[in-house]
Image (cartoon, rainbow, N blue to C red; front, side):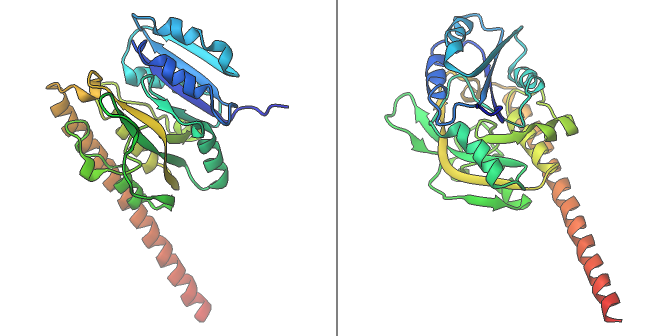
Length: 281
């Protein structure tokens, strides 16, 4: 008897007819096929929808939502609204994954019940280079406190330049993270739709600020395709104010969250001291 899936993979797509088959071919060959695939077609004008429909029979649970174009954040929000599994992650239509990708998230949440978020590492793949390159050779593994988590997630320069000197196997991307639906629903979290980029990092930091427990395994399982024509690699003037706006929001959220944690720890220590003094009387 097949158990109910615990993971949904949300795939927002927009005019990715050149890459979608590769993405779906790899997802169809997962070690653990018991997951739900939710494709959100954001008003594609090419053959994206037709290609996606051809894969319907290759997945146990397959759903396509076709909507008018509203942008990536809007597509992600629509995806979240239609998740009915305990955990979910995201997958871009031009990237692909290794066979252990879906199994990682479910196993990580089971093995680390105190984790509100889990994260795997990722590969960088280039059009003009052969082979996959790990995002970093740093080995990061295990549960991390909030400060260390923010250090791993932080990506202050966004897509304004290739900041390899700040490389971590985590960063603020959503496609190498596993999220709990209960956290998102309880806190009414959603992606900001008025930013050109970095909306994924904002969502991730907001989520982390409201929770405790982050687990990371830097083993790369996701292939991040470095397209020269992708939105994040094409500079436009809106990126400059959006970068400042996003970083202000992220830094403010991090500082407030760390201050709240500091006050909570200080209060706990004070209570322990008082309890100890009472016991000694």
